[in-house]
Image 1 (tube, each protein chain N blue to C red):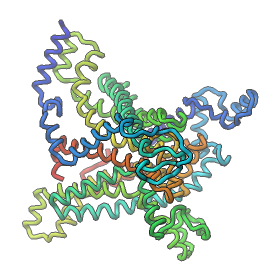
Image 2 (image 1 turned 90 degrees about the vertical axis):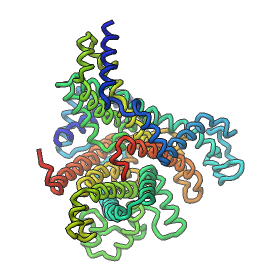
Image 3 (image 1 turned 60 degrees about the vertical axis):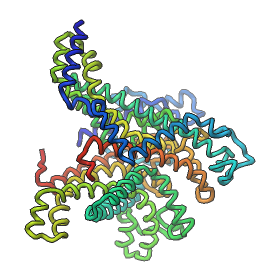
Length: 302
Length: 324
């Protein structure tokens, strides 16, 4: 009873403060995003990429990892649209299946980083005091490194694999989300609806989870969208360096890495996976750019 | 600043000690037995408690001792001193290109307003930051080395040339100092592709941000006042607008350091550029932990210092900002 009362108050409070949520209460924001031709193009590209990734087996009859040494390094032709690699594997199906790994890895990185970051940020902002001070100093330490360099060191230390590369990027990125979440929690934690919930007997965990976090999520979601392209680029870069996915895993960065020694004579080997990375990153960045315009109208004039 | 550097040592130390791989086992090789491992562990102080090891690590760092590289069995610091100038030369050239082309291009683009300029700037800047550096490097090699034959594929010098006598380690500077002007052409031709590859992402972003800042300022009232009192067009652009567009542009330029340092690892790998990135990637493939940690620490320290410089410049260019 007490809780539902608190929720009622919270709902009223939320309805009374217009700036509580930016997107969900302004459907026009999404429409504005779609009206921007570039952002709409980005959304369409992402949709197509996701469909291609999910439906990969429908579009190709070749297994992405099975070798066929009699057909090594064939240039693009009608049976092998993107040609074949050094093991005679069909590059078209490798790029298609690679979308699963590369997009999946990026999504996992974002989810991991934002979960860890938001939890730490919320705790830090809500508790405050010495805990806040310590946690924020911890984020300072992480933010002092250039992201890719620290991620490379972590991935190398964990041992080269795609999973470890994803963990490494998440370890490097969580502080950004922690900072963002903490800032949001600080804005809301002294609002009346939180005080009301506390007066109604809701415990600390309940307040953070049920009242603060839901109100703070919008900027997190926006940031996650903006970061998606870089997540693809960073994990692909780690694989290119050799600390991510290992060949013959059909991952884009790793394919470019293996192909780059052949590049001057067998251009297609690296070109198609690299184009895939470029297109996927570009798609997310187009959405991110449109999103930034919608949320910051001042930028829109530029 | 000191605190941040201290924190970084904590993280790099934690990395080598909390990870599953055992550096001593790597060092000893696959055939070492338990007593040999124990001897090595003792020799490297790995049998002491973790806090004790950290203090020893810190003391070593303060003495400039970054450990012994597992790859070439040389002190990591010596390796870094040897490889660092190449990276500095590349990064500084890339930075000069990015700022030297990006800012004027942004100012120029701000003079032309309208939908087409907007769209072109926007799409190229998004494409520029979406392009994987390693791919850009490969394409540059394909076009300018293989197809056109204009520029070398990688390295700092042609094989037949020997480097200029070392003064600073920056070949361009050394060649000039020692009067070895004949080498300049060779050095420059090797620098162009890697530097441009590394610079492009920052260049397009700086162009866009400079233009954005300029447009915002050109819309201010005091610009109208300046125009009303009869100031010339270029005087307004350069004296009134550009001066005020510098602080926001500086923020973006500062943010590009991290991008350049990260991209440096990829560009050096593609172009066989014998710098820190090249050394670091090699250390990574050989699981050479002292090498990896040394490079991480040095590159991050450079990053922290670069950010500090930007903060100081901020105070210089914007009188409203004060030291707190």
